[in-house]
Length: 92
Image: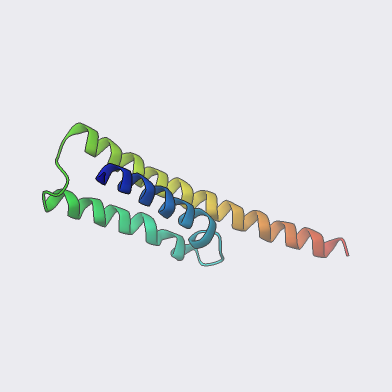
């Protein structure tokens, strides 16, 4: 059950990261989810709520990596939107 909740929460936070937090002019806002995810995973492991085994460490590395990838993709979406607006306004 906890695994299902973790997966659903992870997917929701990554979608929030890409389309809301990182997809704006404030670059630092997109860093919230990756930094919080690192802190949360470290807290889980240090408080023994998440065991130190290969599977959990691999899942943690994958999730943190995806957080940074989605941050970059959100920034790219914002950049494409700005370039499109500039291109549209120069054609008028």
